[in-house]
Length: 319
Ligand code: SF4
Image 1: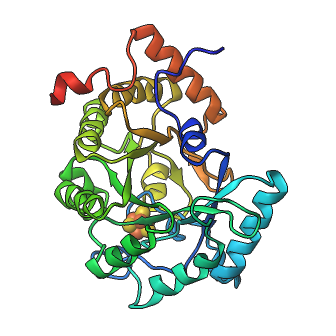
Image 2 (image 1 turned 135 degrees about the vertical axis):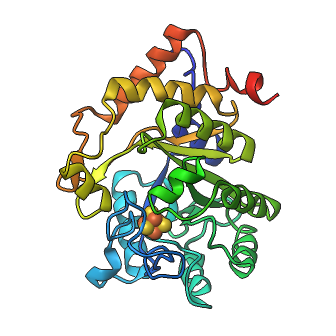
């Protein structure tokens, strides 16, 4: 038997939690973003493309129900016994008109697994909701807490970096304190939280990667998604990169920083993602030409070389 990994990955946790493989279906619920429409800011975060890091499916005319059914069909062709996570991915899904979130959840409801029992008619085992930490009204939390009585609800919240000056410089326009508050409010209502981080934002550096991990550990997020800075077409960063004013990490450096990051997480936190994935036609830099499994292998190798693992530096730093 292979020795256990030195960090906690998603697939085993999903198997342990749901007793079967589980697949994600990304949905575009037609949400928008307060950092694009002027409510919080304009122009969006510098790394975000105009589709709000999402699928753009709604603009093709596919409503939420159609996207869900297509996604479920796709999963069942791959794995007829698999469970499904409905992932409200695009933009800020709690920044919606009154009633819209309830409408979206109502579309999902008939397909929810009943008391954890997955069937072809009812394959949804969880719902994941991506949003900004500064844009979660209590009414949305109430609705999601109520929904979580049927299936777990995960709130996917972007921190990206723990440095407020960098959050401002990249036009992210929320603070570390707002992130911590959002995690706290979600946790109080029994919602799971997944904190997002980006390593290699300009000015953040290796120390920044460490600080961000410490913040995510301290916040008590149950899961973490982390990836390297990717420069995509149609983003603010694309213009900076084209002018030679933005550097990205090479794979070796990223693995070093990622190892530091993982060492500072809590040992219980599940790593939902450790590297970025983006369509080749959108990605400007960096072009590593490496499969994500190779990053995973290199991370494991680096932690083994150091004799450390996830959480090794957590207890020392946070007590
Ligand atoms: S990353 Fe999220 S918050 Fe930032 S501009 Fe894109 S959709 Fe808005």
